[in-house]
Length: 198
Length: 198
Image (cartoon, rainbow over all chains, first blue to last red; front, side, top):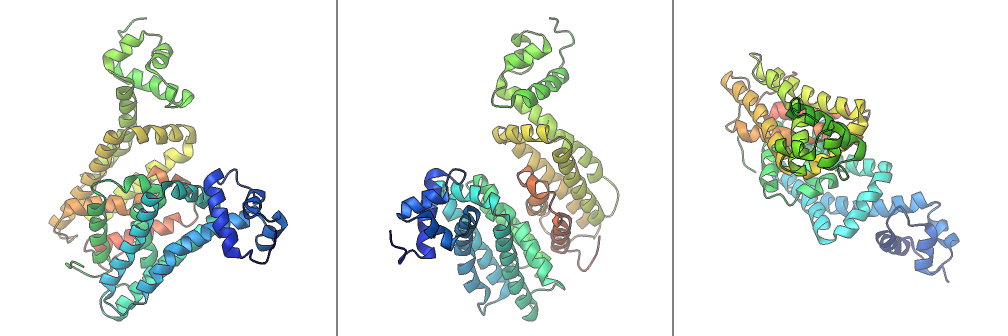
């Protein structure tokens, strides 16, 4: 019953397992404390409410998507190829999660519904990453747009079908890769890169 | 108990009401026949199975979306404005249904899950309508693309967030119109119409 090794990380690991097992609707802080073999007060010291704990679990899941993308954003490579690689990594990360662990994926599908602020921040971060690459592309003379911020948001929205978990049931469609290529071509042209294959 | 006035249209009207009341999972052909005050054999004469009846109800609902759009498609007007008007009509039709009769909208959300072939044909028709406008725009020298068919499919996919019922919960977001405008600008540039407001 010691709190000494009760790190934030350890609570989140166990909370994820408990959420997966009982489902987000039924999981309480007491369930998580019991699985950790600590008092619920010990958990509350790190997370002041059930909502805060759920949000933290959701946030970590989303950071695991956005953090590896950041490495692509700051590469010193042609922006059109970089934007494509960034999008493909975003999409493949989401698809891998949906296919490899459908049960955990379903759990997070439930969690994100309640964590609107956390999800909003995640989508804004993705849009900023896209905007950074587009802006860098304008600087390098590879893209042409007067508003990279709006363009970054538009790129995220226009590719919704391929990375938004709401569409996970479509990700096994045989046409899905070709559909992405068609939208990618439209985006590439839309960003001022004309008659070009990236 | 006469079949004389038992038209396909009348069965579909009543079936829609019964589906709304009992939900798609529970509704049977017998329920529909009872509501029509006819034998279930009379209904089966028009629709050979429960699935055929459900598909026909779903198809009618989707044709009510696509038919008014067709009038815009064949207008003799500048293609960029026409494509925008076509998209805005598609989007406003979907939003109106979601907001005006949420119960019926939810019923159809259930129905489309089971009617994949009907939905696929609907999405293909929408893509063809977009492709027709784009192709006409190329002919008129207003758009520039070598593949209007792919471009039409890309336009439908890129605007998924604004017309696909899966995203209905986002349609009351205060930012949703601005988000559409950003994607529309990207599409317009992507179709070879550069530095232009439509």
